[in-house]
Image (tube, rainbow, N blue to C red):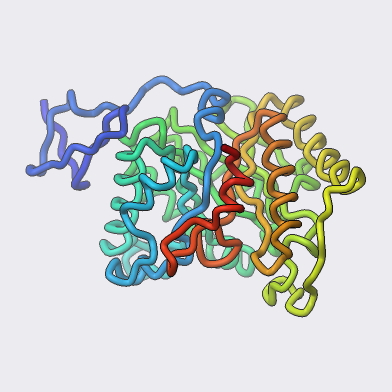
Length: 346
């Protein structure tokens, strides 16, 4: 028995890629697990992660990439276990072809997933079009669902170490009520071809802990990991950031006082209480401090936030590898050592 396949690779449960030279393959090579993996086990495997290539020119041309293939091994060797790949697919879709994703986009995604798995990294495919979805949710709904139809079909044979995150930071006009409908429709699409895939879903208003009370996950689908994001206090974490209205607000310190630490612990305790009540593991998909903050304050904050998350048993992904909130200096080809060590102590 043979099965036709359009993709140029298949996946093994060990993450090894098998290149196909023919358009057909034996059914025995379909190695995707048919048993759902315990989401708490998945969350432990996610461990410590980092967000990558969301704003990299690689999506326009691989010749212009900042991110190099060698970085996957470097990330693994530094002590990270997960990459959260930030995807902005809308500009790479053909509206006249039912929002079909272009081959050039698939080439980059295939490259990223393949090399992450080769280097024993867990992979989160993060649908990162929160800007367009928040601005015009109804107008973009068809594109949003078309994305998940294509990705879920393409990745249906991927190993359990590839997870789907339905949408980063639903917000603005994409209200909690609308988000509830949208994510359930996307989840239904995913489950047609990926019945056992671990899926990541978070609350409205930018995956805010304060909006968890609006999140209603389907009780009959237990293979879901909750995600929240954390950038509090914003005057500290986003100081100097023009897009956050804080261009001229700099020099704000985080001294690690009892009061400052207690504020973080209270926020995390709220999320932990929700997760315990609803029996969902927690992945904190974004946190960080903009690199214009005072370095010593930045390090104190990152150390405390990461160790507190880990005390609660959460997985996490730092925002982000390069560009801003910088963890790795691509120009100098070196880690920002103090930041790396704050996230992953020796």
